[in-house]
Amino acid sequence: NKNDYQKGGLYYERLLKAFPNNIYTLTGLATCFWQLGQSDKAVVVFNKIRSIDSRSHNGMDVYSWILRRQGAIKELNTLCMDLVKSDPKRVETWIAVAVYLDLKGMKEKALRTLQKAIVLAPKYHFAYVVKGGLLLSMRMVEDAMQSYKKAKTLKVDLMSLQGLVSCYLAITAGSST
Image (cartoon, rainbow, N blue to C red; front, side, top):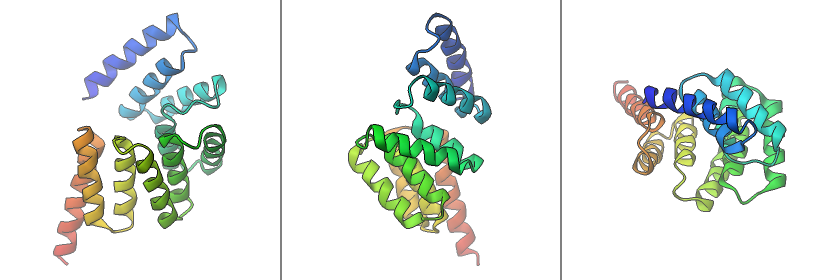
């Protein structure tokens, strides 16, 4: 819930006073900002992470999601190239690439790329959330619902629940026409 992320953000900020360039602490702080809807602050922190270590993968799938929402295609392209070059066997790499492909309008290819991420890490919650969003945007509502349900079984969070609600609304809207 929101209070947890607010408290978490405060803890991470305290930790950063002792360890100002700790990638894991910065990633936690950026994630808290993102969960609180403070994407601009999250981007600043993610950029700091990348300036410290451009090969860091932790949280870069979330960063790609934020960049996609902002329409920052050049930044997203650079991020994806760096991630693929540094470690093509990380789930975050392929989620970021799928997000980039989706932004470019290459939805089928993005879906295949997300499948690669899921094969690499079948219990990685965020991959199913991104897949659900992509499937929903392709009007594949039943498949999107299954993906969001899988995400929810791995981790109950607002994104998977919002995705399920969006699926139910899409089904309801489709049945009333």
